Amino acid sequence: MSNPELAINGGAKAAEGLPNRFHFGKEEKAAADALFDQSIATGNAIGYNGPEEEAFGKEFAEYLGGGYADGVNAGTNAVYVALKSLQLPPFSEVIVGCVTDPGGMMPIVELNCIPVPADTEPGSYNAGAAQIEARITERTSAIVVAHIGGEPADMPGIMKVAEKYNLPVVEDCAQAHMAIINGRKCGTFGTCGSFSLMFGKHMCVGGQGGAVFTKSEDQYWKIRRAADRGKPFNLEGHTNVLSAINCNMDEFHAAIGRAQLKKLPGIVERRLKFVQMMFDRGFDKLASIYIPQKDLREGFQSCYWWWRLRFVAENMKCTREEFCAALQAEGLSIAPNYRAALPATQEWFKDRANKHPWNNPLYKGDPNAEYPTPNCDATMSTDFNFFFNESYGEAEADKVMAAFKKVTDAFAK
Image 1 (cartoon, rainbow, N blue to C red):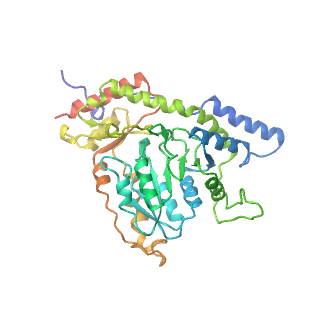
Image 2: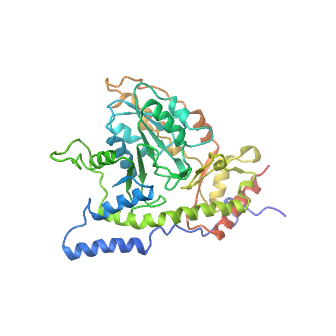
Image 3: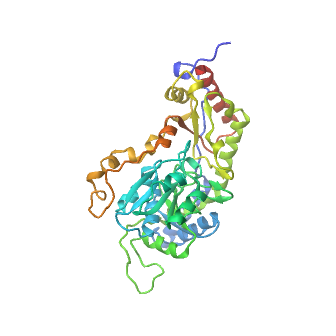
């Protein structure tokens, strides 16, 4: 029997009607309504640094196992505030994984420091300990580590390197809510953990938002000051103590975040269940793909912000791009590559030699330095991203499997 016609060639779609997330519900609405009701009753506007944000910070820290957390107004600003709180020397170098949202690298420049991209581990989107250590110089002042796509970076190994050179570490957990290393949540290994809470993440506080976490009370107060124009939090008899911008989360977003935080474990659990449903259907046996998460270290658990997959070209008579286009036509949400997360390839970075802070005479490094990333280049040439969400269940697993199998069968050698 001949294979069914691919949707890209006019055939019927294999995966129609896949569900949205239904991320918000009555709980978030009730939280927002309560704030408006209170504002209407009292005549006071909804503000910031109030009881909702205080409660959100405490609950967010408790979710991470204990410590201190401050809500901010964006994930990019969470990275900014975390770095600002470290009070890094101007024109020092900050090592950052080469695969990251531009918002994970740009705050380094905004703090008058030099971002130095580190290569990924082989077969990964995450920078590794050896790749980070290879970039360390006498000018290095900090390390930023992102857990891309929900896959944990090698924090035990990276922290050994950081301790060896006495360097602070910021964990960028924008894509890694409830990613786990040996029972411990990502974001709790470094000096600070930064989180994006924008609408597309596992949990959110609305359109945009973020949080910064630390286990140190002293560091927490530095974070608070860095997030709110240097206000002298926990310092008696002082005026504003440093120059900083306003990155405050407001009461409205904090209230939504508190409702969302209660849902986060269930959101991640349902995503993990869907992944298992796909394995139960033989997803990992398809000739067209390899599952890189099989190679994660023992005790490392992805939380699957999306699912990174590897195209196995030697088994197929099409390119990765053709394969992904066919999957998209079947109704799946697919990104054929992740090159948008390579900020060092973008114009703002490529033109750096003539820009501040690279061209400042106080920077003692080479503004034209090249940062080769052969591991990243190899992975970017084979891997693609499949987007799903916590609303996917057994019926959706059937559709997704049907779409992948249909396209695989059509292009298999």
